[in-house]
Length: 333
Ligand code: ADP
Ligand code: TRP
Image 1 (cartoon, rainbow, N blue to C red):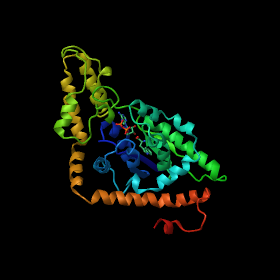
Image 2: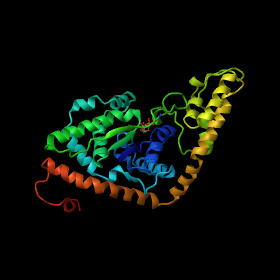
Image 3: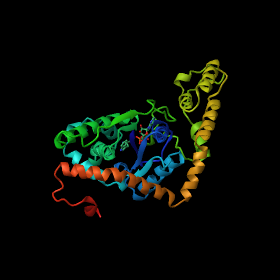
Image 4: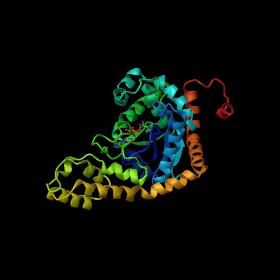
């Protein structure tokens, strides 16, 4: 299956991003034809500092590679290295009704969070559709919050095919593949999110990470009293990271009383190190290598372009944008 997914370079990646997105992406690389990209055009809806934009783009690439993305198996690229997505976005916007975008839940959520209602933010799902359609993806692994965008992508591909396909499916209709359906809680118990200031970053220093974990909000049940694992944030986070046998033991310890929240927090900090300690070291090494990450991204973009450019040529022809028979490589060079 051709798999595509992307992640915005709009902040440091956190545990929620890993468990809800990157982990599944990396697992899929073994049995699929995978394309993963850094959505730095999308990030421009919120990041308006050029140095920060550059840094965050490189950070996402380093994170993916440190966490186990193998560039020999999966193509990793920067969205901006595939400018055909912007061209396709325009074409899709000409067959997509404004009403479809007005129904986008994530747009409304972002306005509620106080983001500026720019056209970029409003048209965000069209750019996302172009990302997906341009590599002819079958599957798009995403979190629950993104499923509507994939359904909108399928709608937009349908509008295009009906308008310009002449009975042919020029744009392939993709499907969402839901990552684990859980939401990772933040240190305050709300959904972990970079915009809520409640995240545990994946690659902070060990000391700061531990401090963050020890600061997870718990209730004030005294040490000796029984505790309810089902309402505890630390328990919820640990269950996403530890195996079932271990969680059964913790469940019993909670219910028996005599256990302080500090004990389970210490175990969570230890588990975090087990999961991410070696990736942190790998990341530090990769960071020293000036050319490796760049080479990976350029190669990834080449692989994506090899699919995108022939498809765009079909698309341009289908909608009458090619009026002379000039081959596209002449026009683009
Ligand atoms: P944030 O809320 O920090 O801005 P994004 O919206 O950029 O995160 O999310 C990027 C990806 O990570 C999405 O696929 C989303 O589903 C996933 N993700 C983000 N936060 C969580 C979370 N708390 N639990 C599970 N998945 C998450
Ligand atoms: N909107 C996605 C998010 O916020 C990021 C994204 C952009 C994406 N383009 C995509 C995800 C294409 C999947 C496919 O997480």
